[in-house]
Image 1: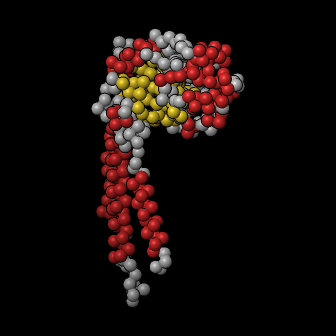
Image 2: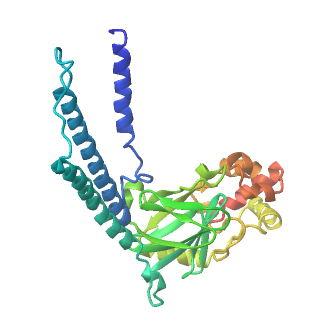
Image 3: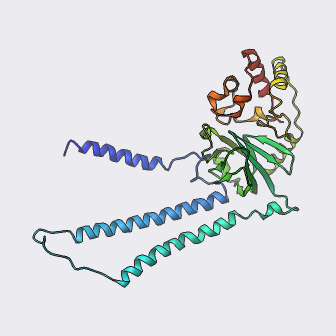
Length: 348
């Protein structure tokens, strides 16, 4: 028995560590560190449902232990049959009413929040100045269009703080799911219909993640599902308007000689699938502000080395992506020139 004691201590230690680590999370990717009204409501439901479940487990455990101790078989009472309780209306009413009450406590706020979060009538108001973003999910990247402003971008979603942002969600190929954990729950993007909802980012809390949040695909969609990420940049309304204006008037001109070579290569090899103006939607991601992006392919830091790795072998980084089948191989000199040009694709 003593030999097993150290093993049980280690197991208990790891169990406690697992319990605590399960609650850890980064502010840019944590449901339990909300940054807006939607996430606040959903967190409150998580806490309420967890409290109810814990209460039920505790009460049932106490009753179980009490019954085991109280009515255990004692020495000399092997033939004794305890008093049988049958047809007790009080007990039957009690264990029927209590679950109903618990369900009502959980159902009322759930239904209320569901209708509140589904209220997108502002999107249909022609006189409303509400910000609407059309989100299209592709294998394996995200496209964001601001129809009221004539701006299209990808992978990095820019949103203003302290106001509702309304989303039209759809998919171009297979089912995906749009999810920004810190801002609100996920919603599917389908190929045959458009789903709509809204999110909000509180300016007093976005600083905890330095105004940069992570978005994910929450629906298994293929071999690179886990790599289908995007970034969300939150800005004060004035800065957001400035970004919109910059995207509307973006003009690119290669500066260095190497970048000029890359511009020619881009025109010959890439322009048929990628746009570099801020208002075009094409087969591949819009690259108008590629040099400003946080990540390469949504998953690697935006550095020259990572761009080069992506151009050399897209399939190795994101298996199953569409660029793999539509990409002509370039030699190292051409890739270096293209990398230089892509890093210069910025908006002022």
